[in-house]
Length: 221
Ligand code: CA
Image (cartoon, rainbow, N blue to C red):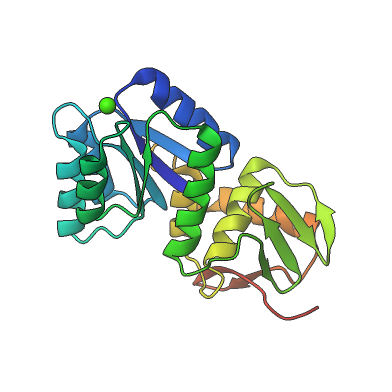
């Protein structure tokens, strides 16, 4: 899951990035509204956390421009404490949720997970498909009910496949959501990762459709 965190306060930005990273997200940060608008407009994220008080271009304007440009990424807005007008304006401008400052990072992470689930029409916190089960709150994986230890990167791949389990995912799309744009890897890095996961999980979990990409196999094994 790839997240853009837009926050100009360096201390909050660092805390945000650390908390989201710890929860298994790939996090990119930026500190002003112009860069935020550009990145949200040109890159593909699973979630954007947006502070409203930003230099160069305020968060509300950024959000309106994204929505006007057709960007449908879920946006969690950070508002000043007690500023109810900001919350109303934020929601009217297309925010999916808001969190008043100061907030607990645990709440932010929980809301981030819920927003991503809802954005693909899946409300249940525990996700299962075929023989694979995934617990986003604990970052745990199980096959046929037996826990399997996976790395952060392996978990990120499985959670992306799980979230989009109704389609075959092209390698380019997976790579973008695994590594982001700044650190883009070759397709063979993905092949190696999938091979490693298949050894851990056993057969019948990650399927390949030649020439198209990867998918989660759904048949009860
Ligand atoms: Ca700010």
